Image (cartoon, rainbow, N blue to C red; front, side, top):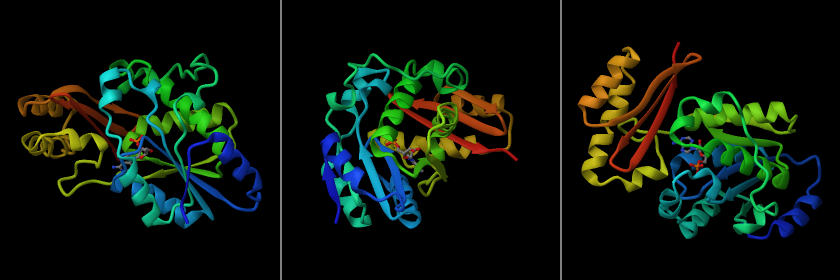
Length: 254
Ligand code: AMP
């Protein structure tokens, strides 16, 4: 049976009683769950005795307050999805409970976080790393499941685990895509139907075997605002905007 927990203290009491022989898989999310999140949860279910899902819309990783306010909060359907998969625990902490420091302590990465998404989302990765560290300390998972869709985030969390000797194994999960190859994302639901049609052109252009410059020009001609198309360590990364909606993607280049 799925247990929904809103109190950190209540979870900590449960966590203390879980024997060390049981593996705990952890999937941190902002909620508004879709098939991409579901794939992470299912993998965790396969590989661990216990799976913990966190749903928390973390204010500090939104550089734009409007984006934070507009972020879809669909807790009832999220809980339903998790129950259907048979997730053991859903942790939904209250806002202030995760920040007893009143937002004074931050994890800052000084290198990779400054590239790609970094300049477009000031403070974003610091917000992500800080909340993920807090959640790791609370959940104390054996493994955590993260999507390759947010590859820069995945790499930065990997780096934090190494830097701070955190005792958690990171399991990278492949990007789950819609029929037209657009990655599933909570942001896709904010696209109007004509914008959604246009969004199809993003993967169609992005995955071509052409230079970053050629891809950028084709995206611009197709009506996108292009934040970047960039190669970094054998991987191609891209971020575009359609109106107010920002789409990101990446793939390994062999
Ligand atoms: P979010 O709720 O957007 O913070 O995402 C929570 C986790 O789900 C992150 O590790 C994401 O990388 C992962 N995720 C989101 N969308 C997808 C997708 N389409 N395929 C695979 N993983 C995803």
